[in-house]
Image 1 (cartoon, rainbow, N blue to C red):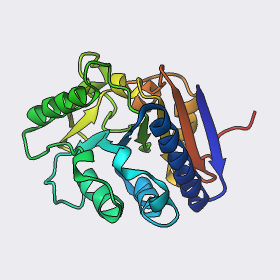
Image 2: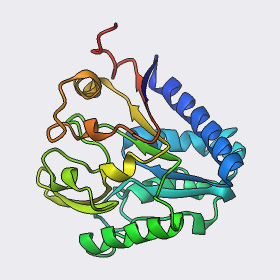
Image 3: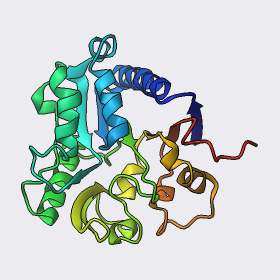
Image 4: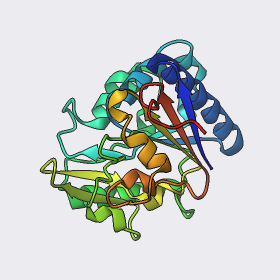
Length: 243
């Protein structure tokens, strides 16, 4: 199932996303004893993370039962402000009472291929003998149609063998580490956060345009085992035609 919800402002979007995450975590923990979340990078989730670090959200979440991963990572030092995990630690995780052993960073101190293989092993070990199913994968949307580090016309888009893979992105002249679409699509829930007028052209293409997953990789995400929720502010959704 795919559902779009449009909010009047970014602030209302973040508040609703925070409420939803609290509800999802509590439900997953009640059902399974834990909640596994894969975070994303970028400016939009940072504002969400900062909100989750404040009252009443921080105290409402049972952090000892929440386990944090990342859907993708930049191959920059662990202490670099552009490192997705460093950003989430700074904005949220260092501000709340989550056990350090519940946080699983992508080990970008290793070469890209080694880092990807290591992270895939970590995920398999966490889920033990079961196919890895995250309770929540949080994603953003680039104005070129990428999500996580699934960039247009890159080899990772056609990878059906791995859970995590390194990918060279020519437009950035850099390597990234990313969940594959196969892993993302097995999540119980995928939540896209899309904010700002710069996303207004790409959002209707991803949701309603002709399918071209090489050009628009976010179209690969269908959460075949669960649901995909799109939370967009009014600016980002301004070019979606009303039915």
